[in-house]
Image (cartoon, one colour):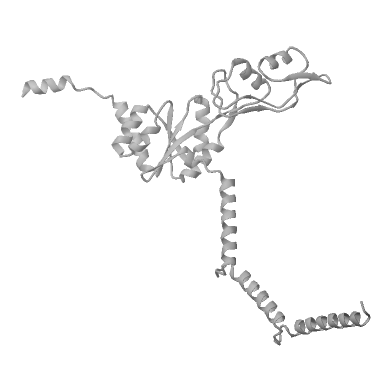
Length: 293
């Protein structure tokens, strides 16, 4: 028995207290908030992170830790589904906000940033035709070397034609990156990149959270109009359609009464007017026939 204890002791690894404390803090935060977000923080400086923490204060709490400790905390808390989003440089966001509100809030804190040589372009970069702030000089050749159609016109450096200088997913060169910065074109964004959110056992990936609100509202408006038209066409009474249905029915009943020459108080004047017009037409027709026309 003593030999077994010694053998087991040799295989026991001491876990530093700070790691145990760190995992406990993450687990406590998980228990204290309804929503947990995994965000990418690569490229964000410590100073920028301080400002971001300040912006989140009151709405959410940010926690940065080692990825392996975050995964351990997830496993211990039964929230291992979110572990797939823990990669590269990651921080956790704890909040009671709705996941969609959290995404919108984080997107709103992003700021434009210059692109660096070797970066992957996040979207097509288009340079518009028109004047620049540059004075004539070597800058014209530098712009052309970067693939930007530049020239001189009326003593000013201009972009001669609108051009897509690089497409999404391509790696930018040093020359083009420098020229974009000098043109004050900042295609990158600095901010917390929300990868996914955990709430009540559900994982919401980024593509679900990224709702185009304008399109969403437009789709709802179109659907409501289609539903209204369908209800009117099939005479389906609801609070929103009943007035239109009654007006349509009243108009139809009135036309039917006039065309069928029904002597009813609400249409009698129209019936008489119609009969008078018909009589005038017959009289004119008879007069024309008597004249031989």
